[in-house]
Length: 60
Image (cartoon, rainbow, N blue to C red; front, side, top):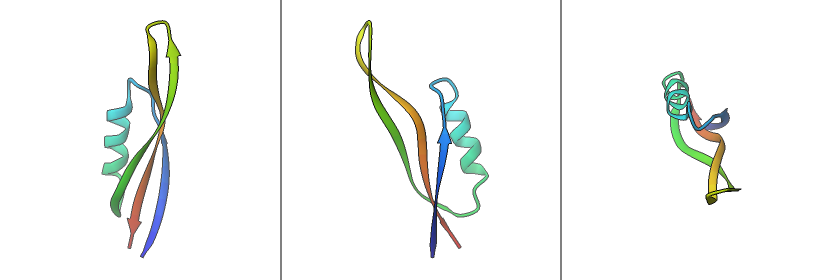
């Protein structure tokens, strides 16, 4: 049993489409999807931003 960790760079606008396309192209089993969340400060106050996703895949 082997695991592969993929990094998927995403933007707020295209996150769902990119993740869907990426997951449909995988051959193994998806174990976890981990977002990299960073706090940011804007005029309206504190918020968070996702820069990339880590996808853990179990391969055969």
